[in-house]
Length: 118
Image (cartoon, rainbow, N blue to C red; front, side, top):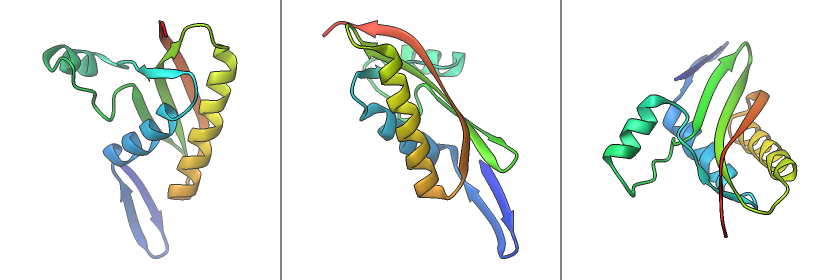
C-alpha cells in the first residue's frame, strides 16, 4: 500500500492497482513475451497454479520519498533489440504511472529474465 498525505487528508493506493496498471503498460510494449516471477512467493504461486497468469507477476513497487521505484521482470522475444525493448518499457511505464496517479517515478528497473522464441 502506497500512502500519501496532503493538506486534504490521506490517499492510499493498493499494490494490486499498481500491478494491474504497470503490468498492462509493460505487456503492451513490442517485444515483451511475458512477465517473469520476481520473488519466491510468486514462483511458488505459479508452480501451484500452472497455466494461470497473475496480474502482479514480475512487478514490484516501492515508495522512495515523494516518488516510486518500479522493478519489472520480463521475458523478451528472441531476435529483437533488448535495449530498445527496455527503453520502450521504461518510457511507457513512467508515463502511465505518472498520468494515472500524479506520483513521480524515480526509477524503472527492467530485468530481462528470459527469452522466448517466436
